[in-house]
Amino acid sequence: MPVSMTFFGTTTWLLDDGETQLLLDAHLTRPSMARVVFGKLKTNTEFVDEVLARFPMERLKAIFVSHTHYDHVLDAVYIAQKTGADMFGSASARNVGLGGGIPDARLHLFEPGSPVSVGAFEITVLPSIHSKPTILNNDLGVAIERPLTQPARMRDYSEGGSYDFYIRHGEKTLLVRPSCNYIEGSLKDIRAETLLLGIGGLGKEDDAFHDTFYRETVGYVRPKRVIPVHWDNFFQPLRAPLPYQTRLADDVAGSMAYLKARLEADGIAFDVVDAFETVEL
Image 1 (cartoon, rainbow, N blue to C red):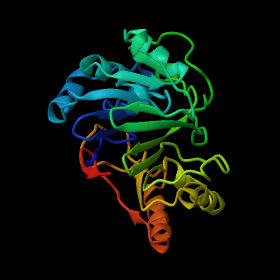
Image 2: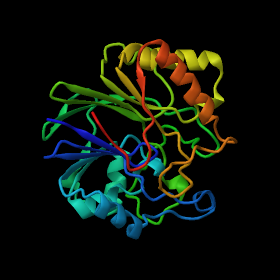
Image 3: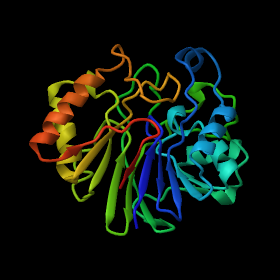
């Protein structure tokens, strides 16, 4: 059975096998930097409704939240309300759901290492690590300790722990690594045909980090195809073509060139997917 994957920028993907849909992260509303830094954040319900009209999610059963920074979870509650989907995540993600009125019965805490079946999808959550902290995300490991209600400040969406997703669908395998970092040896027993690889911040790292990051992700997983994620400027509205993150924040062009060269040398396909583009798993 074919499985389609549609990209909505940052790390948000819709997986669909024709019977069941899964959403990985939920970030369609993309507030400006000024609002992120100085204002409060809330879902742009009109825009999300437009996206849901264009890409119906009437078969959406689950939303998996990799961590609870706003650029991964901001729209999860609204989409769950609109579709009836359950939310899966950390204790912090549960508090985001509770704050938005999602019933506790539809909020599921991650159990790392224990596969969860949603339709024909089997999802195993893996402990992961966020990219190196910056002035905007220096709250790594900090939990959201009480129900969070919108509008809320960016700082209220603390990281709450980071996770990867290993997904099986029949013979198809997918590893989702949203953040650009590594835990030494953590993926040595993981094999996946497709790797969604977070590269946000890679362009600011030195050659030694590049090589170790590649070895600890691509080197262990040995995918047939790598699709980069978290490379776009999420302070700009969601549209195609997606803009690169600003050069001041990251050297995305350099990261893309590095990965393309390394993957080509290893005989691995490198696919850059644009906003609203659908590819097959």
